[in-house]
Length: 333
Image 1 (tube, rainbow, N blue to C red):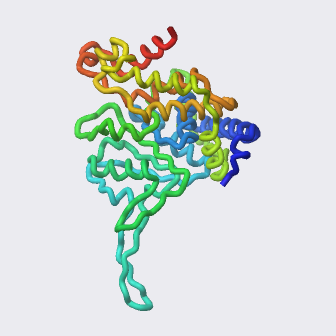
Image 2 (cartoon, one colour):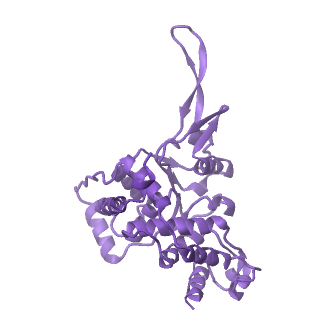
Image 3 (cartoon, rainbow, N blue to C red):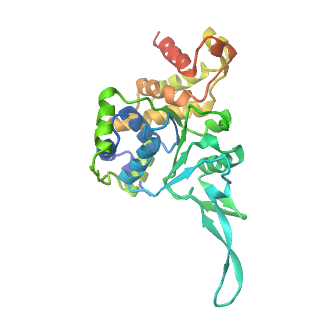
């Protein structure tokens, strides 16, 4: 365990900044473009959150996550969510073992794929709620309960779930309360023309890229603790709380367009994640305290899945990102 002196030492900030720069450089060896997405994933990792990645097939969601685990020298597991997946397929199961010396039989718990540092939950919306809940409980509690025993998950524990925004027939969308477990909701866009040219060139050749370790297990744990220790000015916290409060219809602070277009606003967890994200973003940039501008940069990925547009918004073609951008514009006045 690091001392408070180490955690608040500017030298730790400098080491964090240098390590995360190396990490992003190593990921860029494999992932062409998507720089902002990579940065947000690193922010979430430092803040001890979890990410929901949304994008059409072929945008390297799985490759990004696997490359991240390689560059961090962390254990990695992938769970392909399907309609017949059971909770025990995620958490683990008991098997009967026989002692060859005594002949006695006993149950032994075999760990499931959730027992890894980085867990890729691929197409999480393709499995029933009971199975989704098994992963989401582990995300929240950082432990698994099975056969009356509690098994603690090794830190760091980082879940990146993916969803395909198309082919929604036969899927099981995550309820809003379960979406709230994810710190960030990141949408991957198509690459630019030049980026796609580079992707095709590199993936259709014999080139093999070796990803180097950019950050040790112990360093990551130290940096996660460091981010929690970063001081935040009262006005920055108040800005984050005020921004979230404005998403709640029926409140005195809610603008008219919020009352007209939002069915349900974001809860207190959004305010917490805005500040944690702002802290991590400041640390990535080599700063020892976040600004309101850092909160603004985190607003869309933190709030996008936490506000529920109503029928009026759907009828007028207004989505959650439109509403968040409008709130941010109003906040400049």
